[in-house]
Amino acid sequence: MTTHYRTRRLGIAALTAVIIVGLVACSTTVPNTTLAPKTEFGRAIDALWDTLLFWGTIVFILVETFLIYVVVRFRRREGQPAPRHVHGNTTLEIAWTLAPAVILAIIAVPTVKTIFETQSPAPANALTVEVIGHQWWWEFRYPQYGVVTANELYLPTGRTANFVLKTQDVLHSFWIPQLGGKRDLITNRTNHLWFTPESTAVWNGVCVEYCGTSHANMRFKTFVVAPEQFEAWAGHQKGGAVFGAPAATTAEPAATPAPGAAAQPQSAVPSSTPPATAGQVPTYPADRLPLYAASYNPVPEDLTIGNVTGDASRGAQLYRTAPCIACHVIQGVSAGIVGPSLTHFGSRTSLGAGLFPNDARHVALWIKNSPAMKPGSKMPPFGKSPAMPAGYDDQQLADLAAYLLSLK
Ligand code: CUA
Image (cartoon, rainbow, N blue to C red; front, side, top):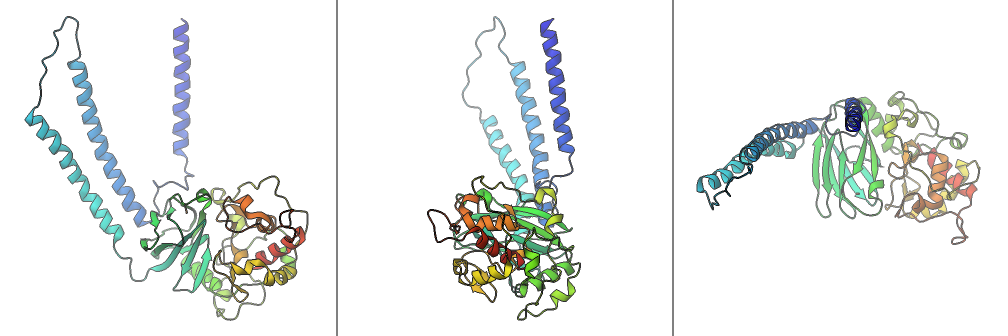
C-alpha cells in the first residue's frame, strides 16, 4: 500500500516536472538562443545542425535497437553452457570500419558546403566593422564612416555587415547568438565573419573565449536599426561630441527619442564642426531597452558616493588636466588610445562593457573605483581614499560623471 502511494506521488512529481519543462520550452522570449537565427549565416549553421541531428538520431535509434535486441536475445539463461569464445570476424570488422566512414563522408557534404558558404568573401557593398578585442571591452570601428565607438554596436537591417576581427592583447571570441559567431579574435591574425541582420532588434553579445579575470564581464549590445537610422547614427558619431547644457546632466539620463526620430539635422553636420548644443541624439534610448538587454550588475556595498549633484562645466574643466586624458580619447579634447573612446560616451546605454546602466551614480562610482566594480579593470581607482589622499572627492567625481554623460 505504502509502495503504491509512493509510486503515485513520484508519478505526480514527474508529471509536474515534465509540464514545467514543457512550458518553459514554449517561451518565446529567448533572446540568447542560437536556435532562432536572424541572419543567413545563422540559418546556414542552424540548417546544418538540424541535418546532423536528424541523421544522428536515426543512427542512434538503429544502434540502440540492435543493442537492446542483442542484449535480450542472447542474455544468459539458467543451465545454459558458457558461450563459445571466438576471435576475429573479417566481415564484421570491415562492416564496422566502413559504416562510420560512409556516415562521415555523408555528413561531410553539407558541412563542407556550409564552410564554403560562410567563409566566402562578403558582398562588395557590405558595411565593414572592425572589431578589436581588449581586456575587457570591445572596440568597434567603421572605417567607411570614420566612426570609432565601444561596447555598443549599431548595424543596419538588410545590409551585410562584414566583421574584421582582431585583438589588442589576448584571445577573445565574438558572438551574438541569434545573429552569428562564434569567431575568435586571434593575436597576429585577422579573422572575418559576415552576416546580414534582417529585422530591427536589440541583441546581447558576449566574449566566448576565456581571456582573463573579467572574461565574463566582456559584453556588448547590438542595435539593429533601419538603414536611415543607421546613417543618422553614423553621421552623428562621426562628429565631435555634443556637449550638453550643464542643467541636463545632473539627473539620471533623460529619455532620448526613438532611433532616427530627429536624426536628419545631426547627420548633415560635417565632422569638423560639432553641434553647439545637445539636440536629439539618434541613439537607442536607454529607457526602452528590453529587460534581457538591461545592465543591472550589483555594485559592491562598500563602494558608495555622497548625495551630490554634478556640474558638467566644472567636470569639463577638471577633465582637461585629469589622468583620464592619458588613456581616453574625446575628439578635440584628449587623445589617449588605451581605453574606450569617450567622444559620445553619454549616448551609450551601458557602462563597463555592458555591466552597469550609464547613469550619473554608476559613472561616478566607476571613476572612484572601477576595479571594485569590474575585477581586473585596467583603470585604476581615482577616488579619494586613505591609499590615495590626492584622489577626487565625491563632488569632483560627480562633476566628471556629469561632463562625460553630457557628451552625447
Ligand atoms: Cu574577451 Cu573572453
